[in-house]
Amino acid sequence: MLRSGWVNAVIAAGVMAVVIALGGCGQFAPPYMRPLSPQTRALLAEKGMPEQSPILIRIFKAESELEVWKAKDDGRFYPFKTYPICDYSGTLGPKVSQGDRQAPEGFYLVSEEQMNPNSKYHLAFNIGFPNSYDRSLGHTGADIMVHGDCKSAGCYAMTDGVIEEIYILAREALTGGQKAFQVQAYPFRMTAANLAKHRDDKWYGFWRNLKEGYDYTEAAHLPPKIDVCARHYLINASFVDRGARPDPAADCPAYERMPVEALPRGPVLQQASTKPGTWQTQTKQDRSADAGLELPTQQAAMDKPLGSVLGLAFGSAKPTYRAFTLGPATPGQ
Image 1: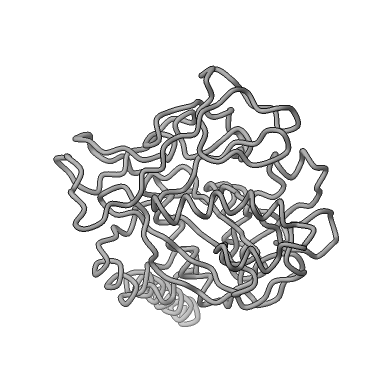
Image 2: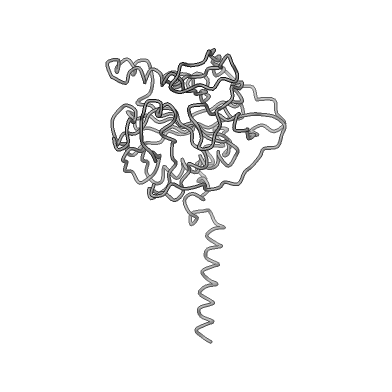
């Protein structure tokens, strides 16, 4: 009788400890469930960036830096933080084949299904290599991640503390209604001077193609619309035939370049909305995607006005909040 009472007391104490821990500041919760730190929340508030607004990620190999950009109420993306990349494998240039231990370069999309809370490298998300551009060139590989643990065999590795913050920022954006966030992976900051230094490199033509997307984000503070045809990235184009579906390995359908809506100089007027900062979810055809950067279950993206292809809309409708689900974790990553 005494033993039974003692066991029950221990169980009750354990349950109470778990309840207290989960009800506290989150330090005892699993890493993927933790809230943003008070310091990060304060910085977001200072910069006018809602916690659940969409994100954009840019990676620079030569500088070993990863940038997170966040959207503000005007619909544009602005730099939030620059994080040091702890390790990446390979050299400058794209990933070509399975086992080459090369970190990829290009434009990728990450959805909820690619978030991995059970990674053996602390936390991770799969960037989506190979995309249709990679496949059109016969590039092979799989399970290319941004993860923790500071060691890489073809991935971009961060420290555990850094990947936690990036993962939580991504989780909040996806929970807030962003269907997928764009990852732009570059060999270096794509300035004219840096590109000129590599004029004789075998990847020079590929890097010039990537620079088009870099330049667009720099000017417009928006992720570019990406299609793939003729075995290259087609940046920010609208097809003359709205029903055209580009073939990554065939010539591009007739298209027109969409205008670059450069970031206004001076104060930005707030978008007309009864609820500024409302991030509305879009259909699969409206998301910030393209025929070349498919999500796992995505149909080819329809040509839409610039605002809709970015997966953002503003209006009086109430925001749609979806419960964050873990999705299928990739075993062993």
